[in-house]
Length: 538
Image: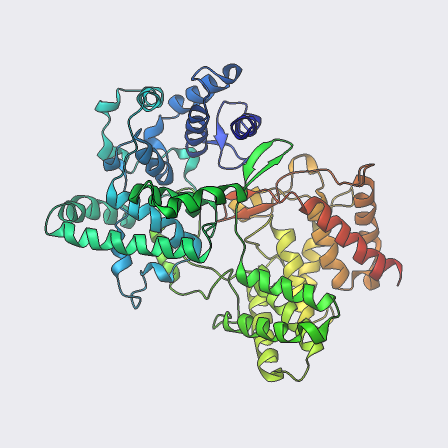
């Protein structure tokens, strides 16, 4: 059943040109097409399977430069599989994990998803591991390239990437660094006595992988490092207890929807979860039972505030933005650091403001100072046109919801805060004739507000905009935009009570979209609930 449903999902999201995108609504890319084509072959599909779909996919690959121009993450996976040579990869030396934490380049200072993905990648690179050469691998070596496999110039292929994939092209400085490591450092580390340092680094890296596995009970931070860690455990010892413990946890990420079987994209966010959990506990009115927990949540949240008052996703921002120039992933943006964002800063502000109402005497000075600094950061995040760029959903409507609600939670109003006024003016300027709002995922990657094609409205964007306007006091100024938006939401509901699934709403690393299927019901219900409570009843 798993194989059948996985194939169904991949075939359902193949583009008309034969390729696959980085996400289900994106244009075809070499990364998406090569990996999905290989996946289908490994799942038992023939090179001529899928009623011509496989042939179309292979034609797209060959017409766009072949698998030699797949981005670096793809090069690594293909090398492990044995359909790309390790010498065609830019170095991922495991020795960086031996560097002192004082250095700004220490991986411990990087965004947790970045370091936890490149940790097992560095182990596989350091080992130059290649899986067994089977009949299908030999066939793939022929299917994926325009010239014979043994004639490919792998050194040249190191810095060759399909133009369709290049969201973040390498700057010259980075290419110089890779060439120095590839030609000058790696040969030393691959032979004695340098190989002794490599062996020590691999041991250190594997120790950290085991620590991550054991501390998360083998589910890991997310699906990407989960499968990489599992592979590393198998490479270290295919009969190990660690590998056996990994296998059943794969099922925790898999789920079947109407379009087939897919994997969840994340395993949570501690700071984000703490802020929302605080809201949830407060809403229960069980203060006698929850008081100690809320105080612990406050202590955790306060420790995560950056010096400028902002909050990032998981941890403090620990290093310098210039490190982003060495972002090795051509397909993603801003992956090196855990950057502060309006969503997390606003969520924490709202959580602390709610906590303060319940416990006005508990560390009041510290909490007020934290909220004040956070609100200043929210204002600093705002763009000149009144919008906020959001990092985790599409995009400026989402950012405006968090920006405005964060400022309101900090005690600011439409009357005394120019940021709230500008934010509301921005939202009202984007309202469509239908009464709704509709924003394309292109806003995220281009960082410019981009409406959906054809001027269509989107339920979730509309709900976010409604919530922002309602909490800013729009009903007192002019309720007409809220009435129009509510009519759009009500008229969109289906007979069974569900709301239709529309365009994708989630994003990470600027360029990769992610589906949040529950949003289509959560946010329209939320917006209509607040509309009924704060607009109609008033």
